[in-house]
Every structure is written in C-alpha cells, then in structure tokens.
Length: 135
Picture 1 (cartoon, helix red, strand yellow):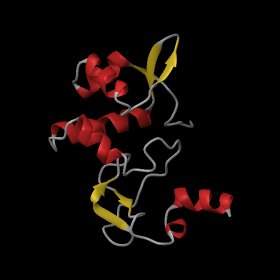
Picture 2: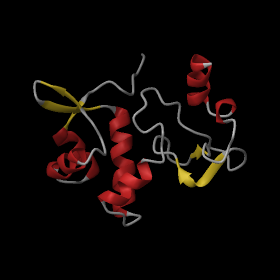
Picture 3: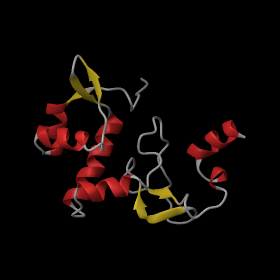
Picture 4: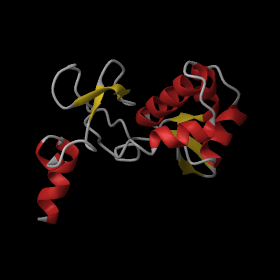
C-alpha cells in the first residue's frame, strides 16, 4: 500500500494528544507560520510530514529552549521545510552534511550543507532536479 506523507489525515485533537500540547499551542505555531496544515470544511488536517515538522518544532522549543522567533530563524535555514516530497537527508556523519543541523524529517539524519558548497546542485537531490529544470 502506497503511503503519501503529505496526505492530510489527522485533526488537531489527535496531533495535540500525540505531542502532548494544547490544541491552542498548535494554532499559535500555525499563526506564526511554523506549519501550514491543510483545511477541509474549516477543519485543520495534518499530514505525516506536518507531524514531523511539529515534532521538530516541539524539540526546538522544549529540548533546545528556543522561543518562536528562534524556531523561525532555525527553520529559515531549511530550504526543504515546505517542500512536498522532500527526500530527507544523509545519515552519514561524513560528506556534505552539517552535523549541527539535524534533518527535520528524519530523526538521526543531517541536512546537506548547501550554504558552504558552490555547486550545491550536484550534491543535493532536491536542488539537483530544480537546477536541471532551470538550466
């Protein structure tokens, strides 16, 4: 069975219970642009990738002590934050990854270091396709 991680499936109550936060917390995070759930009949519906984003936000706030402004600054460094079908990142500690920048999508993996690489199209599967289209 095919599973689409971007398919909206879960309502706000389910996600609030999963994250052990009040539903209003999720609304505040949405209001600040940290996540953008789909809507169906005015009801918020979250996908599996939305859940991963929310878990990462929760981690940054509760484990790292960031406030919403800090979280916004961190996620601004993730070009794949709003990308559908993001492939995730590299689990290796070697190569073109930044061990100080954990991947939001896959726990235990790290994002590519795009800012430090001149030819980022050749190392990042997400950007490789975009660059080929724009060439």
